[in-house]
Image (cartoon, rainbow, N blue to C red):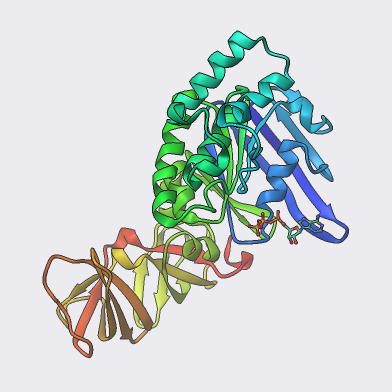
Length: 355
Ligand code: ATP
């Protein structure tokens, strides 16, 4: 059994289903993110793990102990919210020490632990400061130290970085991951930011309308999204409407005049599907030399890349090309688009497409 296990966990608020039949196994030391748009049930899931929200159905186990009905304060979990919730009248040191005092830990050990936690988040020099004397990133690190100092079996993070500006947020993502690796605390983080989830997590749980629709390594989520929603929520994708032709292991997707080989099994012959391909997997080649001819409608310079929008016989496509220091195609230019066979993914339009 996994260290933290959710089995068939559901949460209803009256008639509203916030979380539906969630099954999740988190291994000891793993960093798992709950990722999804606003209202998909991320926070509710975290609150049920924390013990702040009762579970309507299902079971939560921690280290082989059923904690479904256990009170929050008996679970001993570390929690960091988006609003750091530091005590403003207490120094950094006192804020971090507070949880240990509540646990009646002897002073010498307490000081030792606080010192260690503060050095972990690089705040040893600021132990005597008050929260108002710290930057946003430093306050967030105090909140993290305060959660880690109790050495919780599981650390729960709810949008811990969303109050920080973009640059600081990126730095903190990196730091958060380093600290988590160092202490090895099993961590579950809620975020709606796909790049944050991808960069810090061992595995990502993508949630849609209360359901976990994919639980995978970030690379798998990006390269093999299981639903249309995931293909565009995690990164960008061109989606072409098509139909499955052929049977069994000889299947292809028909998109207009194109027949695109496919490698995913399990689709019903003749069913409507979407062919997904990432913009950076498409290549611009001379007109007539690719699978699809097209015309450049617009182009945008993004610094390290150029983004092109092309009209083609099967619809508009977005292409991302590395900026190699040259201006390649003007707006209005004729071009063609090609891609390696292995780069396309077939997604069901609805459940009827799956055999
Ligand atoms: P966000 O990113 O906006 O915080 P979320 O994915 O964390 O969203 P939840 O806060 O878990 O989503 O909410 C899931 C669903 O449950 C939403 O439809 C929300 O309106 C509903 N919900 C949450 N808390 C309550 C409540 N106390 N009473 C009624 N409905 C609630």
